[in-house]
Structure formats: C-alpha cells, structure tokens
Image (cartoon, rainbow, N blue to C red; front, top):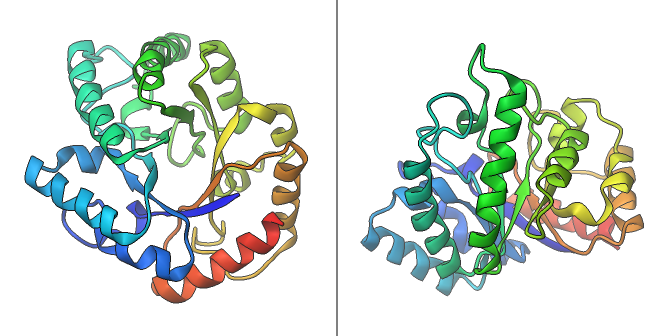
Length: 264
C-alpha cells in the first residue's frame, strides 16, 4: 500500500491548496500528495504552473485529488447547470491530467447536498447521471473517480460506505468506484466489514484518528481491524491521511510509521 497525505485540512495560505506542505511530504516518509482539485482550478495559469513546478521539485507526485467540485457547482436539485458543470469538468480534469492524477475523490458536500424539499430519489438519479457522464471523460485520462461517503454531520446523501457502494453499482462504469474513509466510517458507526462486501470496488482510502480528526499517533484495535480487512480483500492501493495537525513534521513521521506497520 502507498501512503500519502491530503493538504486541504492543513492549508494555511489564502489559495487553500495547501501547497506550502508539498516540499515537506517526502522528507517525512510519504509516497505521494493529495491536493484539493477545486482550489487548484481557482488558480490562474501562472499560479498553476508554479504549483506544478513545486510538485515536480518535491520528489512526490500528486497521485490523487479530493475536493472535486466547488460549492458553486450544484450537482443535485433544481439549480443544476449542466453547461457550467461541463465547463468546470473540462478545466478541472485537464489540470488533473497535467499533474498525472490517478484518483479523484467525489465528496464535495456543498455541491451534492440535496436541497430541502427536493426528492431524494431524483437527487440520487442526478448523481448517477453525472457519474455516468464523467466516466468517459476520466477514462481517457487514466483517472478513476471514487465516491466518498460523508457522515451526516457533513452531508445529507451518501453517508455510509454501503450507500456509496450502492451508488457505484448503480452507475456501473469501470472508472467510477468507491472510497472508504476510516473517520467517516467510525462517525457513522458503520461495521467495517462493509470492506468485505465492497471488495474490488474500493480504489482509495482516507484515514484519520476519529477523536478530533487528527493524525494517528498510536496503533489501536480499530486501526488494526480496519487494515486487516483491507488486506483480506487484497487491497494494494493508496491510503491518504486526511487529518488536522498542529505539528505536521512530527505527526506525519509517526503516522507513516504506524500505517506502514499496519499494512504489512
């Protein structure tokens, strides 16, 4: 398994990309960096080229992106603007491809949350249609989109891995798969054995200590069980730490050490 880290939760600069942490990744043991796509799309061309150069000199690759859609791109409800969505996808996927991104995470709660009073079944159908339309766009670029279930405190649709799996199966496209986030799994009190049901649909993992959503600092039974289940399905993909920290260098080294031990 490859161990990476997300920069969205630790970003301190106004652009929100977390690019200030890119050069610290490799020296603290990470294999790759996961950057927020919507924030990268907001950069002007000069800023994006600068970011691309920083990644190139860091020794790491941006193998994954989260934050697929910004809040102003509606994915459900009556205000969906397909022309606006298409234009955004063209720019976003173009930039992701320039960086060699392999996985894009669809969490984006502010985009996909269902407006009050809007039928949930219609919102579900909108997400199915969206993902089916995205599939050929990412397939030609060698990218897989993974559906990220988010706990009910953050989203009102696709809250569990079981629901994410149901959506992936409804979409039924080769490049639309599933992410399991340990933090959200615990927040929803979902049985981690959903991993066994999902099997080969799982193409990406997010990880954090649920107590404060911080970097994991020690091995605990929940982590061990979670990783053992991943090994049982033969998972050999990426695990991104998506967590807060007040001391990145200290916490990153310890987290990488723990995750590598658990992945053996």
